[in-house]
Image 1 (cartoon, protein in one colour):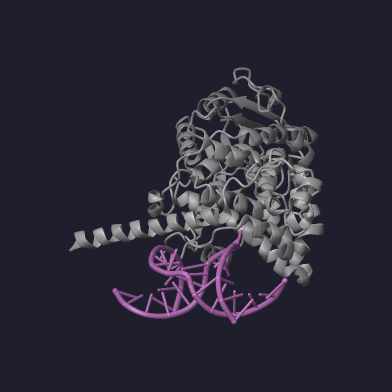
Image 2 (cartoon, rainbow, N blue to C red; image 1 turned 30 degrees about the horizontal axis):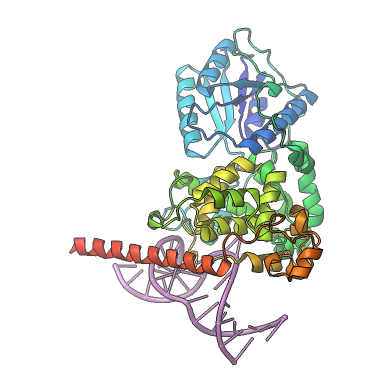
Length: 499
DNA sequence: TTTTGAGTTGTTCGA
DNA sequence: GTCGAACAACTCAAA
């Protein structure tokens, strides 16, 4: 092994140059670098990204390649099986080592373990780093030594442990190795087929987002400047810009949680007045950590109920018509429809509205949470292997949360409470724009002359509610009650068998 | 081991 | 309109 044998840096969900520990360590090694991204065709059981995520990935890779070019580096993109491609590349380039940032979803962990073993068997050093979490899942434990299943004790234990490392600087310049003649074929980002073409549905995404490290930084600075100080009071208001909207940037690792953590803490120490907002915001970052903690310890979180007693939940007969109305934002409940259309148009949905829309699918339509999780996976730019299933299970009540059985969101009340002027509804459900605020969250109750004046004489313009709230609520409560009876019977059976 | 306190995000009803 | 109480039982985590 010669001193100028290259080091390979394999980028995955960490598409940034700053606070990129794998890249940093590789650069520090003094070796010339080969930096790659591999579009995996799903051969290793890794969940393929949904449509919105693919769009984001295209632009994020493009931005990363440009950032590399600016400091004299190069990003090369491959397509296929990582195991095969990495061995081929390491061999063709006589690489000394491969660096990457750790992943935590089950298929990814298995794939990485196999790749590491294969490369080591080939005599190539492999070094992995934490760049995606503040606290890796195996480091946060309760007094008993077991992993924690309730958020508050989890976050307290995490914050009581060693603090997250300070962010690393981006390399100022890079020594880059030539692509080896016998290396695998490289692909242009534009040829990966990540962008929608027929039809091009990404116009709303382009208008809403700037993927890439610079876009993430800009969004974060804007939030620190204008949103953070209102965060605690306004974070639940979809009509107000008080949340960070960093989730897709975090999903693709264009900004690291450590950068966020230290910048927010620093700001709050400099200005005590924002302390409550800062801790509230960081606890949301903590929920992301908690979701990864759950996924790590319960790898089938995406498919299986975290609480197995929910396996007996009496989901309704799958109704294509109801599901379709939900997906298209035509349920007749304005706050739900606004959320589902925001999702379709922008690839994002405000957190409060995600809960309302998810609760509606599960509890009003009695449709299995996994069906909703799949739709979000396909349509959200921030679709995350841990956050998405953990969030859906939380709403369903099957997750790591002692959900009170009576917590059934009322879409009318939620709308009136969190979108009091109806501005959010009017933005995404324009056919309701002329309706007075008094009726904006319950248009079917508006008097006929009011409806007519607002252009809503026909229910073809905007549908009547597809289910009645009170009826649906009673049905959901009954379903939860049946679950209780089932689990009682089961535990009776168990205690009998012990006797 | 047993006990105790607590658990992100709510709604409805009646005064 | 506003306010407080009621709405199950269970699991988790730590004392």
